Length: 453
Image (cartoon, rainbow, N blue to C red; front, top):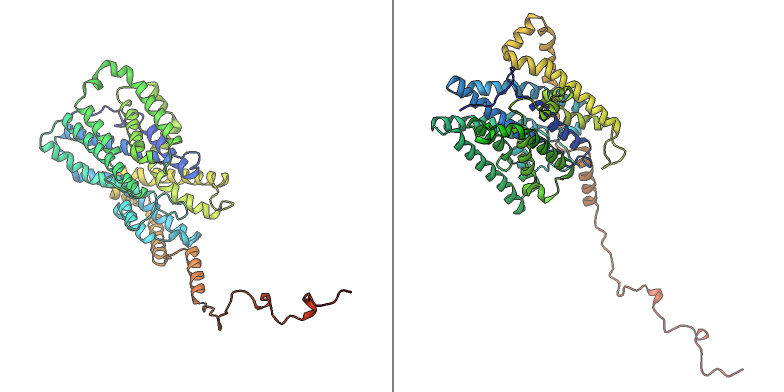
């Protein structure tokens, strides 16, 4: 199998720009859902990129080394994902505990879901409604990370099986394309059968098609499919990329989570259009790739993982400190700017001093570097204090919010009041004073026997 060409750094030019587009769509959806009603589709752009990139890396490893080292692959994934995740979880729990304990309702199961990369299934088991803005969870957005990690765990094993079965790239592309179609069809069928939007949206089985489409594209490049190797394609791919981008942007600003079309082809369409953007990247620079490589987009794209992790807990915490004027009212401009600034700073710190060093040097190598610079005297105590506070916050987290407790107290007060039972049952529902009396004095009744004056 051959793989996709990349630049001298091993990165595919333009992918960071697509990551930036995806994470900015998600931020827009969470901060201004009325304006960016389909911003949740940014996750599906991520899924396509992940399926394409991971499959490409595995194909490249098989081509260059003659085998795929699963342990090394999973170790690289752990280095890439776990350090920032642990930092966000521990820090968010402690800060939320200091700001408002209500933010920690359900935090125990959320932490378990984050630690085991099973948030989507854990929250489905708890009957969580992802689209319910009245009861947001601190780690609500981790559902997509769970699906990606489940993919990272199982997909390399599938590819190793395909290699050992001597399945060529072209049939593998067809296989993954069929799997993508099956997943999209299952989303539509479950939605039509009355399943909740959260079940349809959270399910690994129903939301796998984006990554499968990306994987199919990677196999298509490895085959290679004739059209992708033709000179005509190199002239067309510029326009294919822009068409895909225009379609995805139209869906991001036009689709809504409550629309039936969303689950009956809308998300799948966004994924297909994301494939059009990705397929236009390899093959040398074009105006499309140059657009995606402008400095601000690359900066955001390189930090997209940290931005995605941080933005939602930051948004909930800042919203407690700077609440909206009334329930249901969008966050103020000050809140939005504060969230964006805090997210940018935290993601930069994470990228520069946590994600990057551990990805390059590993956990042990990074720690040895800290020891060599005597930073362990600061870092180690800080980590211990942070973890201790996070553990205490977890142990003392409330089961229900103050609002829930107030409602329950009101209901108990109503139930504790004695019922008012009447001592006598009236014969009539009409008051006695309104019933005519036959003993009314004669002077009040005209008498026909009174002589005419």
